[in-house]
Length: 286
Image (cartoon, rainbow, N blue to C red):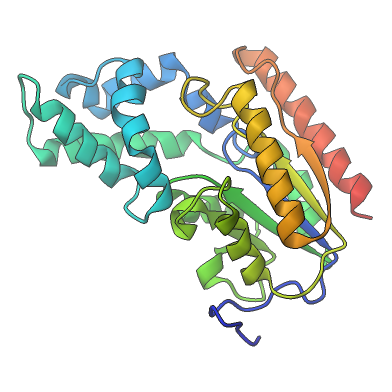
């Protein structure tokens, strides 16, 4: 496969459909559940961060995540490194002043706990296998995330027998590609993200693009999620995709209206959304 000017190999010369999935809040409910106060509090205790001084969820969000999100999600540094750097600075101003080795160890345990939650929900497998069986369809998981998540998503797909690769390491044998903001150095709200993806996919023209995304609706409201932010993000992202790809775009807004629920109620609502999304895919890809 001949590479283009950027070194990417053209992918879509014989593909009619492009399907774009979001990850956290769409393919992964666990990533949303981990952000709940009770789960975060337990993870802070289990990891050792609470013992070092990061005890409350609100401190975790406002003092660790928010100041590091831009760097963590648009560079290769990774979640563990940016949280360690920030936690070291925060805790150094306190009474205990733990050494960096202890902080990094605790942060590493915390990140491992997050990734253990941030799994592809098994109820997505029929829809993903349906797409994998189509010779006329490319599938991209496009996510604003930390660097560690790229390999994590690849491993999650591998568990169900699906080969995937990030844009810079993809071969023609894959049909699932990972477009992570940490790898592309910009968020999905930035046109550069979609220009990079278009350049990777090449000059072929898709008949249609199907986008399945929660646009941050299902995620931690004060920081990234919430309906107002989600609707604005949806408007911006869909307009950009239409302009750059010049193809018909159909959007499935994966809005979990009852994301405040816990237990069975939330699980049922999420399953209903997955079933509706699968119907959306099977209706438009035929």
